[in-house]
Length: 108
Image (cartoon, rainbow, N blue to C red; front, top):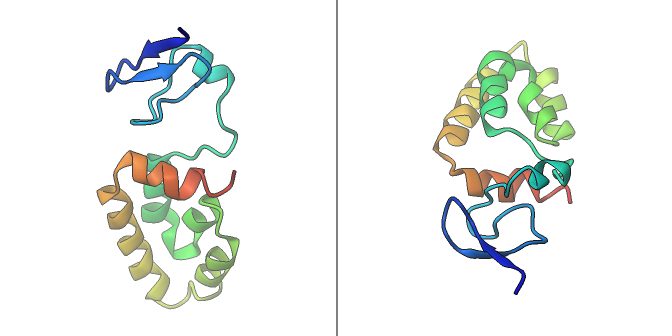
């Protein structure tokens, strides 16, 4: 029996998994060794959209270089600024699991 319980949601998970399938919580120090290289921080993405959103930095960070280039191209207008504020609010309302599925798993 190669199962353990997740410390966050108490669901049974395999010892081979670094992340819980239900809540995506890391499992011990072994989880750090097998960290997904495509992992992105929701907090950092939100901060980038607030601070440098007019230039599309958050879009480059999230792996959308075309949209980031459009933000950068039209940074002299107020349209990217308004869109960046909207993106920041959307990131704030997004659940961490939803963020992980949308931005971290799409690169895998």
